[in-house]
Length: 299
Image (cartoon, rainbow, N blue to C red; front, side, top):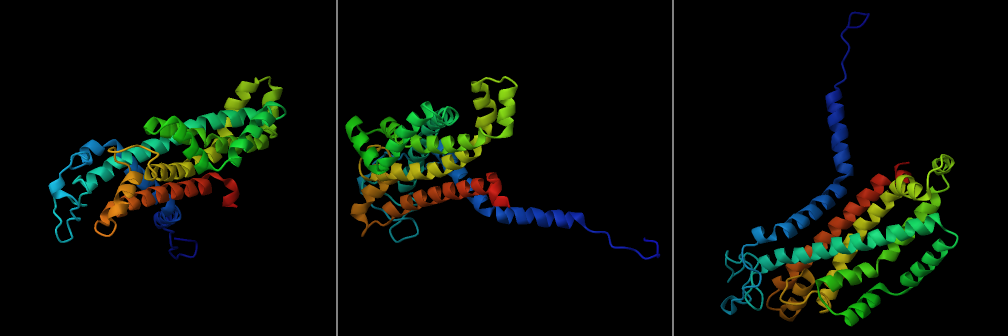
């Protein structure tokens, strides 16, 4: 009650908080969707032996090219049908996530570590060491990525380990370039000059002051690179230069199913959808991280 004797309305802060919460959810819907997709893909890869209803390697020629269960001739035993050797398509799709996710994360982590270290050193010691490292980076960036990957894997051979090494070898330069530019910007800030004035060593300044402030752009790049690595793994497997049969991978499943497109559309469709959703999820997650971590986009 106020001075005039009338009862004033009390604002309902709980409704306002709920409204703000819903607005944040809506604004971050893309990021949440991307995170959920990547989380599902990772959980599927980790728990594939438990989730898969059948042995992905078991052949049954008497059940070859069975359609999904909702089509005529399909059976609930094989929900997404079977391939040309009678192997369960759903089980191979689930196990195929193991290769894509393993290659994707490993081929992001390895070049990320190498590229960040080289970019950190080249940005901090920009006069001689930095100039040399950046010229090497320019050389790697000038070579078409797909052509380099195909050439290297042709020389060293196919296989999961070789595939990860090839993808890592040809992508470290992107991390080094981004890190170099970020360090060049940060090392001129006043807090870095203050750290120098206090007698901190160069290594301490790089690891305790520069690296944490340069990490957000690298995190965004790593998320976007995850999508690219999944695509490259699928591309090389499709071309027969990745993981070899009978190991199931999404790219290999697309390659095996292209000969049966007119009679067994499901062989390539579901593996293609898995690739598209996972890549879309990684890209949306990367966009959300960029919008969240870049203060310039909040102005």
